[in-house]
Structures are given as structure tokens and as C-alpha cells.
Image (tube, rainbow, N blue to C red; front, side, top):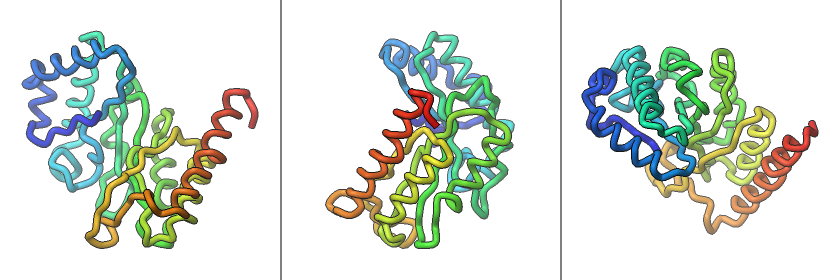
Amino acid sequence: MQIDPTYAAVPAIATGAYDGYLRSYADSVRDFGHAVIIGFGHEMNAAWYSWGYGHIPPATFVRAWRHIVTLFRGQGADNVTWLWTVNQDSPGTGPVQDWWPGPAYVTWVGIDGYYFRPSDSFASVFGHTIAEVRAFADKPVLLSETAVGPDTGQSAKIGNLFAGMRQYGTLGLVWFDIAQNNGIYHQDWRIEDHLAAEAAFRLGVRDKLTRRLWRQRRGVQ
């Protein structure tokens, strides 16, 4: 679940103006009784959202994040995994660490990033941001929004994506399975009906993720 303050003022969230709604939301999550992953204000280190870089001070975002987490815990919603999600570090994004709420308020770190061009690799898309995050946070990293575009040499780059996940020890990925058609940054990200891409994806899951998890559970390097 992604809570984005599109129609809410982040400073007002921090001072409790939306607590009635948030308590109701927290109660629903608690009563659901199963594990739920929740993020707030994703990609805040980038400038394209109203809650992000250049629009509000990072300290204000941090106060809002901490307020939400504290409120949910106060309502007994202990079944929440808190996912703090940044965009891959790139020209025009702000310093990632400025938006960090602190380890007590985050369960997992999410990083959003895409393979747009044939020259893209796991190291160039995610490597620098993962290194930045791990310099100040000892939290599992999830590729929380990603895909490999058809313009990249898709099947080979899908293999590179999974190999990078294994090398960097990430949790997993959420694939942006959407058809877009508006230039290099809005490609058709789907792999359905693309046999080579599907095969590369299945192979990556089998060989790079499933076997790594099996080995980790048995203490094998």
C-alpha cells in the first residue's frame, strides 16, 4: 500500500490535522490481521511530486513520516512493514539521506529505478543509490518499482537485473507491468507475450533468487 499526500498538506500531517483519517486507516490495517507493507510519499528525493525535493523541506517530510508510523503503532497496527522508498539517485534528485526518518521508523528501504537504455546496468541504475543507503541504514533493500524496457535489449538486461540483485543482496522486486508509449522514459514495460523476456525473467527468479534464498536459509555461501 502506498499512502501519497497528493491532496493533503505534509506539514498538516505532521501536526496531526489528518489524525482522524489515519486512525481509521490504521484500525482497518490492524483488523485485517495479515502482514501489510505500507509506504508514504514515495520518491520524495525527486522533484516531480508535490511532497518531494524542492517542494517541501526534508525535515517536514521526516516529521510527517514519523507521525504516521507512531500513530499506527499507537493503534496497535503492528502488522505493518514500513517501506521508505526513494528514486534512484540521478541528476536533479536531492540527497537521499536528508529524507531519512531514522531506523526506528523504517523496516525496509525501497529504491525505484528503470533500465531505459542499452548502456544501463544494475550498477549504473541501482548501485550508487544502494551504496548511499547502506552508508547510513542497515535495512533490507527492495527494488520497489522497476522494469527493463524493450529498447535496452530486454532479455539480456533482465538477466543483468537478477544477477545484480543477487550480487547486492536485495530482497526482491516489484515489476512495473504497464504499457506506456511516450518516449524512452515511458516504454511498454510488460513482458507478457514476449517469449525471450518471459524466459529470462523465469530463469532469473529460478537461478538468481530462489536458489539464493534456499542457500541463505541453509547457511550456504
